[in-house]
Length: 434
Image (cartoon, rainbow, N blue to C red; front, top):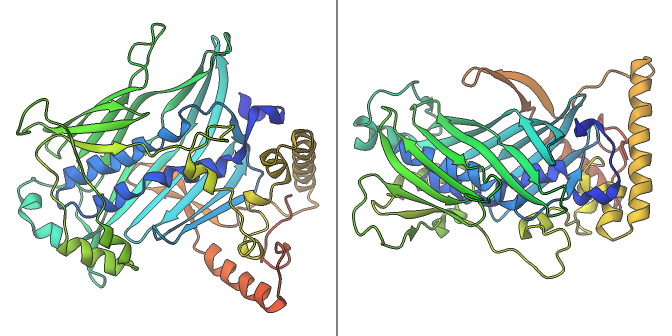
């Protein structure tokens, strides 16, 4: 199991796995579109498209993200997309990372323990853990003919009368990833298995299968799938590849079989909605009808190729951005302050290797001090472990404390006129891990 082995820094790319977790949000527009679809089977299809899009950023990337240190965090706020994300390394043995993203009308959260091993000339990466999406939807959707004619749902809707919405909960498991061609030094990545997304309220399900290529390379990067309604009837066929685009075709599609697939664009006015209440009201009066002809469910974003040593996506590049005006307000445990990762980003590879060894030794020493009772027992600062009745699995829930503490620490930094990173003394109950 390579997750327990310290590897030279040359195997890494200058990102943390916490940042790689945040890359799941590159195609968050699919979740916003889902909140505007009145038919539950359509919403499940788009959530599945979002789940599949998480893998597109791995195309052409062979280097390994840095393993997070225990207690390491990463925050990411997108004012244009109106979401904020926080990840924390909550356990070390086994290593578990937790991520929580709050949008206007959705929540995405996941935690994972990644195990990796060599197997017949390839590297196999097996993540465990469940991914969750919760959509906030207009109550008006429950009164539409689409819902009334769909049949009985598996669960009653979870209604928030005060704010005029109900929620739907979706879950899926992440896929196994193989890094092939190691023996011949011709590396390439493939993801294999079924991405099975379930709408727990309605019972709708969408399954997207990542096909294995085999020795001949046939079906390389190909995916197929189908979307089923709550009664088990197929409503969409899905085809494409995870490196470029997916097309969904309604089973009752009209028009020619050779007709070019339509593109569903995210409504630009959605950016003007600030709160969940605004977004829900907007969705109620501006719902989207999915075309009854083939349409593009997902399409990959353009990737910068110039000066892109690690073949990162443009979105991934933005995660290391650390403008001077942000530096005093980040938590001292943020991945952007990791000295080994920063040294690698600037091309100082020997320094990066030295710093990586220092940080790992410091973490081991801290663990020994805990075991000997010199330090208090470890407890994650921003997440708590709970149980999800829908998936029958435990998960790590955001405790809502981070953004409040960040605001308090920011006020202290402003009063002090600080321009440098905050010390651990500015933040409450935060350790010096770097």
